[in-house]
Length: 369
Image (cartoon, rainbow, N blue to C red; front, side, top):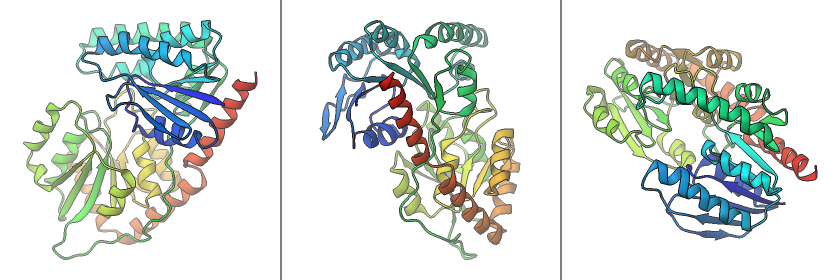
């Protein structure tokens, strides 16, 4: 098949778009990635990357870049067009009018995600969220298929388009990995970690504040970019920052191997968009045999309890986060059990190989109809 992946928002390094889909799919198919990250065009065997440059404004990206991506992607005459951003829905409709087979990939529950946009006032968030829901209902029923990043999103969008599957962002299981929880009682600091987008809604402020209260000598290995950039300055002013080692953007597998963390933090706040999400980082920790300390969101509590791979805390309370960090550090045998159980769960169910097979079969179904 000739498959075109379209994104105006995600960089070519995006794990879901590039690593899990484009790169893997190009082993047996002719694959094109159309993006706008400013890193230039690139050809890799069966994978061709076309870049249309970074945008100077949100309007330029949504209007100009999307139009360019439509014009260029139409010329390759792909068998399947796989769209990854809500702002591309309108060009998806144009491709459908041209007789193309088009899939929309809903990474998030977008209407709920809009309610988390703190740069908008509450009334604007509510109005935009409702308008998007109406637009979604009108548009997505015309697509050849829908892919949802979680079962919750699948069930919600199934009311609009019945040809839908969930393809979850589960990790690729690392080839080599440590086997034991290792930490000593000497002066060496104990490593814990957080990897991903660094923002207030993802709990970074409360996490750093909790470091002031932890009884053990710990270091938080922090990996990712601050969003917005101004948050970096605020975080660095906190007393707990002295216990933070910020790595910036990193290769995940190398990061886990290098830092030897014994606790993986997933203390996202209980926002509308997080309540029914499946945090990728939680499963990445599990796949690297790192016990999880996650927010006490009901869905996450259920997963963690079922797989016996960690514990939960109140993400709004730095003192509770600190207590749970100390509790895990004091229970090495329990953490070793969590480590093995989490890894086993990823091998048996939470891994990309199973999701990739679902994706391939979905493509074939659409291609052949």
